[in-house]
Image (cartoon, rainbow, N blue to C red; front, side):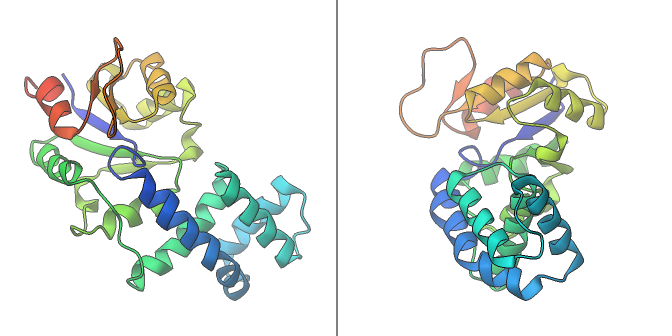
Length: 230
């Protein structure tokens, strides 16, 4: 019986185009000014230490660090320090009303439905926990964060690594067979399955693939096929 739902964001609850066409360009445009303005803030300084260590750039060379981060944005690099700084930039944008998080209508509907039915909902995304809370906290349909019990990012492990899902299970203190993981990336589903979780493959665009893995076009299909007999 499914008691916990763990969901990806990009391509699952929210459109890939929002992340790549709105959030990434916003971060690229505003990151340089943000770093120059907030250089001495402890939370920013901590992440810049990590950027310097990982890249080899001089820690006191702000422009070199900015150039490194801009390159990582272009590469869509899954660096935890980059994700943390992007989250800070996005937070400023959300709070100023310049950003509104996209969420699919069916995702918003069923996240509330599942929460109201007593299912525990969690997010696992390569974006930082801060970024996750922002995208759900400032959506076009309001604040959805009350529906979630917790959030996981790459600090728990890589999304294509089974060990990350085992770490999540350890954090949650539940049996793997009671957790349903939703994602649009097959390699992530394979990793979750290796840890014993149930999975659903979200295919938002195009036809469903021929596969032994459960695939669905939206959350309504997931609910009907996997959760109605809960």
